[in-house]
Every structure is written in structure tokens, then in C-alpha cells.
Length: 147
Image (tube, rainbow, N blue to C red; front, side, top):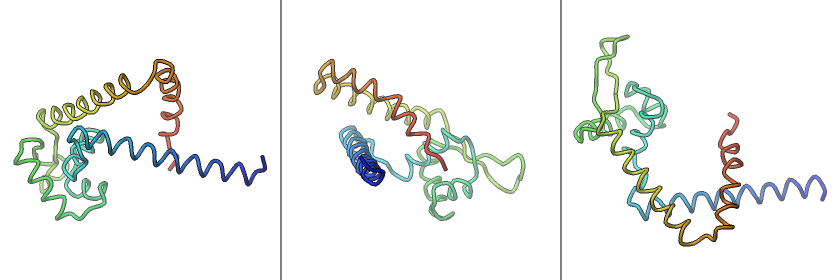
């Protein structure tokens, strides 16, 4: 196989992997009622990155400050986040995930895991389950995308 053919094969593999993973994620989210939303993405970001200001949240999510203020207000009304005075700059507020916010994220993850478990059990043979398990380290490595 020539270098050009290798590059074309890698490009095709990349397209197929993106399509398969995207379709899988969408199907699991749809079938568990855990679709992505501005609110769920904000909760997830707070859990991963820790407390931050509305401006930082807006910047990290790529939305306007006003949009993020509305998202935070709804999350706060639902008891999923709280606003606290920023100890570094007392004029600003820091958004923090509440225990209820953590619980909501965990419930969604558990629902998705249960759906995936059931699909693996029903649709994959023991041999196919082994192949899938063997592929996990490869997917983990690919997840370490360089910036």
C-alpha cells in the first residue's frame, strides 16, 4: 500500500469511527432521555473543571455571557448549582455544583451505563464482547487528542 493509500485508508477509518461513535452516543442519550442541553453541558463542565464565574463558563462553552446567565439562573432555580461570592474578587460570583447537581449527573450516567450494559448483553456474543473490551485502550488513547 502506498503512502497516499495509507492516508486515504486512515481518513476513511477516521470518518467511520466518528460516525459510529456519534451515532452510538446519540442513540444511548435518546433511549435514556439524557439528551445534551445547555444545562447538562454546564453541569458537566462544572463537575470536571470545578467552580467558576459566569464569564468563564460562557467562554469555555462558547456562548454569550447573557446566555450563560440564563442557564445558570435555571440551574440555580432547580437547586443544581449555587452562586457564591468570589473570594478573589468580591464583586463577582462563582458558580458551584450542588450535591443535587452531582446526583443529577450521576443518575444520567447510570441510566446510560445500564442501557449500554443491556445492549452489550443482548446484542454481542461473548467473543464480540472480548473484541470490544480489547478496543477500549485504543479508544482511550485516541481520546488523548493533541491540542
